[in-house]
Image (tube, rainbow, N blue to C red; front, top):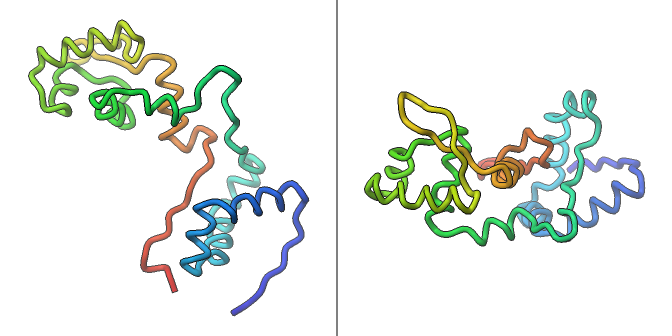
Length: 165
């Protein structure tokens, strides 16, 4: 096994120590692939680093504003089933929501009305002659930061099982 030594700033060294103490770092250590993962991830991200610099750590929410995970836990089961639909398409129709939930479109309409009132959904543009619905502004932000890593959310690389030694 080859050993590689790197000189890093104190700030990066502190972030590295925190990472190693976390569940992700421990999982990589347990699998025996930490070094390979670090170098592979580094090589894959060089162009992005050269263009944008170091990735930013996800900032804690401002005081008084709940974080994304806390906010998502407050959703109803139906809302939790609908939310992933917006990862694929920014607007959904009543029929699409009903199909995902496995309920009648009229029942979906009742749910949607409540969600419009509470701000979970907002009216979107007509699509194929049908009203579509967008996530409310606050939920767009929560959903984007949670599910779209291209929006400056730190990426978590997942190694396939066959890469383990």
